[in-house]
Length: 457
Ligand code: HEM
Image 1 (cartoon, protein in one colour):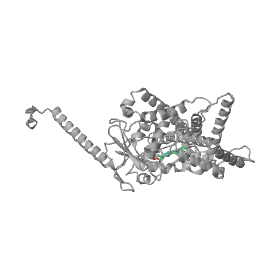
Image 2 (cartoon, rainbow, N blue to C red):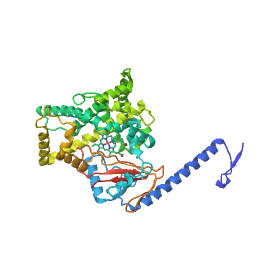
Image 3 (cartoon, rainbow, N blue to C red):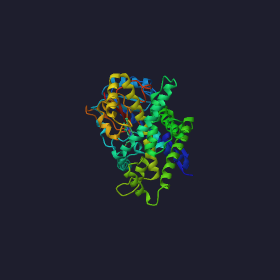
Image 4 (tube, rainbow, N blue to C red):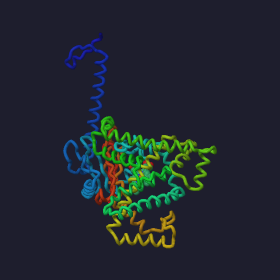
């Protein structure tokens, strides 16, 4: 057997079995990586010293848990932005430094950087992956650009116009329910809960042309979407469960997988049904005929979509985009609407002016329903909605990784992070007035090794 001289280690000759050699190579590889990682980490920490740092909660967890998705968490954000108006650095856990940019002068540098320099952060978004697949928020590069172009027609006003009727119907169902509950003596209603069901109802009709009557009776599909949204937010707070293999061993992990299956089965069945019921004239003719009478839902738009080479979206792509719209469209709009109602309740004089504006518009109309063209005739209401979104943005932060150094307007540099040093995103959703306090807006950008928050103050 060949002998391996390890005298330089003081070990004398050792039988050099292939296993021993493999072990040595493996250990050296590991050591080299740990050293490189440690060097990069300390380099990043050193370079981030130009940013102020709020007091840590403790040496191990750093600032983890400082900003929770609660009213108190939003107050902490407000205070942080007040204390560090330009931006600050925090550490999430032992090794994840984040730069948070708060000032409108700082933010564009990161947000306007190309997707190659500041791509989306996958630390948080990756929890959505099993549910949303490669939908727009989770895809990058060529796939993202191709899908983005193919989805543009979905936002054409001719298509959106037909949805106003759906919004009216869903809102009327909600109002009728409120009237009934009030007449039965309910003194308190959780607006966010009711409005969420209404936005989900609207989306399900606009995306799938499916009426689950979810505002009136429980719907398994809608319950699964609400559960998935809650589980993703919860997981974000549990750093140990960021590891997939651990998460899937937990009860929450199993609930997540079950809810994903249910949501996917629903979307798949709509896509299959739509393909099955295609008449002989083929997909194109059918969809074009539907488009003429403007009854296209989002699934139709996706089935119709073709790229420059005439290639269509696969069923998997269609599912990802449809599920993404259900996710991205319900919580944001429900939160925005709940805050509008809250702000109007706090300012009765503005509320009255909005009411007068709507009454005036609908004065001689029967049925008294808002139409697409009316939206431009409600300037004061529009201002109130915009001001409410400014004061209480439904998405308070977005995150980005950075693959290159980014120089801010004041000369400070957000260092490029090493590939194996990950920052951590905090996706803050300001849900409803019941859940969150007043706070200035914030956008969060994550850099690998550093994070940027931007706040419109
Ligand atoms: C008040 C309502 C809404 C707010 C405040 C809002 C906010 C945002 C923000 C901040 C982003 C960027 C996230 C990032 O860059 O990391 C985003 C992306 C996105 N939103 Fe919304 N959103 C709203 C409504 C909706 C609705 C109704 C839909 C669909 C029905 C939707 C679909 C999307 C999609 C697909 C993306 C990803 C776009 C891409 O990556 O190309 N959003 N939204």
